[in-house]
Length: 54
Image (cartoon, rainbow, N blue to C red):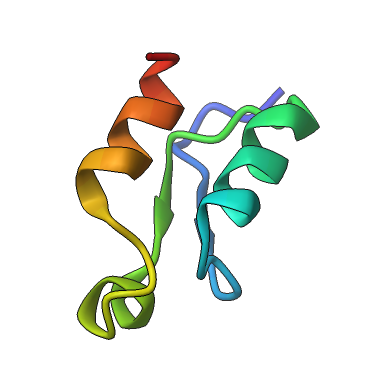
């Protein structure tokens, strides 16, 4: 087990990518997706809803 936060970084550019991370069962504490948000390819509200299970 890892005692430090684990953040996925790189290659997170869509809701499908976030769903795949969620489905992987990996003990992730977060994901970085700056460019996809900046370019409008990923909606922050939809991403949060997906990850919170809404």
